[in-house]
Amino acid sequence: MVLVLMIFASCSDDNNIDLSNRKFVRIDQSSISMSIGEKMKVTATVDTIKGDAYKLSWSILDPNIAKVDNSNNNEGIITAVAAGKTVVKVESTDGKLMYFADLTVAAGAPAIKILTIGSGSGNDATVSYLQNLVKAAGKSLVIGNLYLDGASLEDHSKNISQNQAMYKYNRIAIDGSENLLNDKQLKSVVKGENWDYISIEENMPLSGKPEGYQAYLSGILEHLKKYATNPDVKYILHQPWAYAKNATDAGFINYNRNQESMFRAIVDAVSAAASSVNMDIVVPSGTAIQNGRPAILAKIC
Image 1 (tube, rainbow, N blue to C red):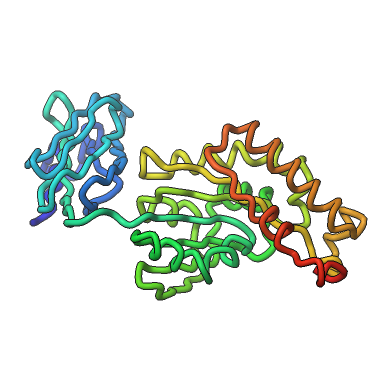
Image 2: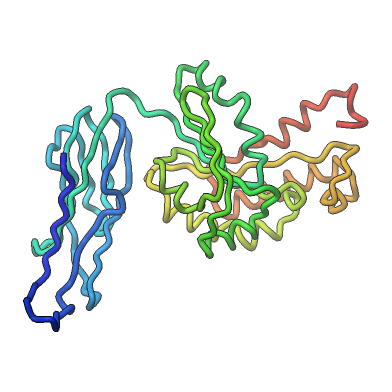
């Protein structure tokens, strides 16, 4: 199926071309792949020299394969209904501008897709066991771990605003195979797959300090919600764990090198932050690890 882009512009053999009528509409994805039951948000942009406003309408060539919600002018929410191939169309209501994107719907239920964004703790928490746990429940899972070693919420905020390509991205496919890429942008990774869950975390030294959450978490969430393609995505705040009792990390001084104090500070800071931004889920990894530290190793763990 061939992608068709129709641009309506006046042409002239005169070398002095009038650009005032140059305008077009486009979708942020020229080819869309989904599974039955999946929902995806696609966004259209109208570019004009004059900046004219256009009202847009969305449609699906074969409504037996997918449906689209027209409730938002520049966004269409596609729901995959049956396996097959069709075309998504967006056009201005005056019929002057239109754009087409190929849509393929695969048979079978979609895999669960989880993206973690952080300093590396999320990668540590998911890479070894989560895939097998989900498989045991009869589900399939795709994991994306986007991280920058030691990055704080402040670092993520700056990287987002400056669109920095500096992250490591470890994608774990349904079969468990890993693909580690470097120099990735947060925006491109968030938009690159239809994530069901997106997790964010503070780095360990600052995880029990409320200031970073208060200053940067809501802004980061605002960007994530703008980039995410799944209209039903759930946002997770990951709770890091306290350092081992014999840790020599510089950040441990923030808690007077007291593991229990650090753990309590993390619990309080994460709980307050999650409430302040109405986070959908808190994953209490820190609590699980603290509770699982055996008494026999209490002096060092």
